Figure (tube, rainbow, N blue to C red):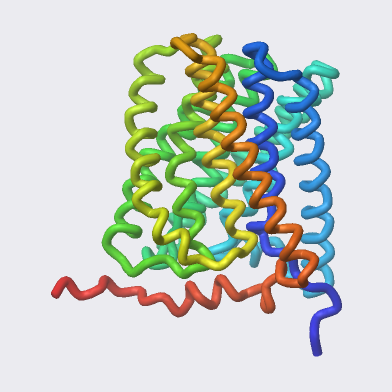
Length: 337
């Protein structure tokens, strides 16, 4: 018998996260007088509304299929995406609620920062207690501690808590340094990720870009040595993604394509910050080109998602499809000869 309500996978929280990234790009553009601030805040409100819909549908699916939160968090493939359920409203509150009400915005951000840190710590403890099978690691593992730390840092800075922002930046930075070595080893030396998780490789471009944006917010918009160091590694990861375009073009569309959206929105946002701060020759045209490119890209993913929804192709046949694929992955190092 089919379940009464099909489960909404945790990676669906990447949809509002990607829309929020686009909203941030427009807000950065507004900071430098390049666009009305209402567009950015409207996109943030849209992301918040989609987050509510996805969250409600996910909870209904959990209840209908008797799925516990503990089992979801323990899932080696989907579990890390749970952090997006907390990270997204945290940044949205800093972006759009805080300008309307400082007290309410700060309160919501602080509560969600605590939740983000607790969730990141919980995942770290779980990975220590239950040794990971390297074949099941993917770049989505950056989300709890790396994305959580850097986004929490930017959110704290946006509501005026610079000291807290610096602490959270440290959380994100050290998590990134540790997990990057593990993730790159898995990607470089082990069999390819299953198709459902291949889009998560795009997350590799996000840490340097999100960290850059956090530094800009904390320091008030200066291109210093830290920003330049982050830009160097960020450039490497962007070029690596260009090399992977033939791999991505072979994929069929799934909701996991939203893993492409926030990372590239973060790159565009960091670029808009850099251009807006340094004002190079032709900076207006460069800024508008970056804004148009990321807007068009996320609009295409959105349209493709709506089409898949109308065709009944958006939800997986089985809620455990991705996990089953990963479970079949070999847990031994491939032969070198």
